Length: 111
Length: 116
Image 1: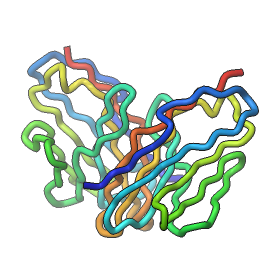
Image 2 (image 1 turned 120 degrees about the vertical axis):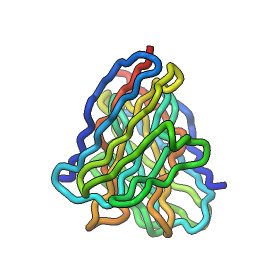
Image 3 (image 1 turned 135 degrees about the vertical axis):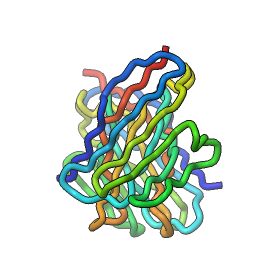
């Protein structure tokens, strides 16, 4: 059975701190891993990672994939209160296009 | 950018009634749409994959007669919760796959269903 596990479940930081979120997976026919940010409504897309070792960056967010060790990390530097959200990772397989989501990491950034 | 809408955003219904939720891709064509449900403080669970012009594929444990899915056009899929019960109360989210970008999915804003 395909598994996507995120850690930690939740964390509380102060503005300016750096956070690192983890996502490990066990899936057959892996194609890509995606990161989403979910505030009060539906998830918004952050990154899609397909190749190992290539960092993707968007402002203060960055992410990298390790296909040998089967995990990805999402980094947020200089956190702001607006970064408070649940961060979800999901994997998509080579055949078909279903997303399998991890349980999410709830991040709270305090002023 | 790709926009997916859902209607209604919030609905309250009585036990035993049916509720229809619409999912539309506004500026792209979607041959495939996905329906998820999300319970409070939990992650998204895929319910079914909806393919335009064919029957939906349901995930294990999801009753197809209870959650009716219709994908009649390249921009519209509907989910009907039939004979709703309080345990069906949840946040229902659809996503759509752009026909031109097969591995990206765009999420709708979700529908919060409360069954009393």
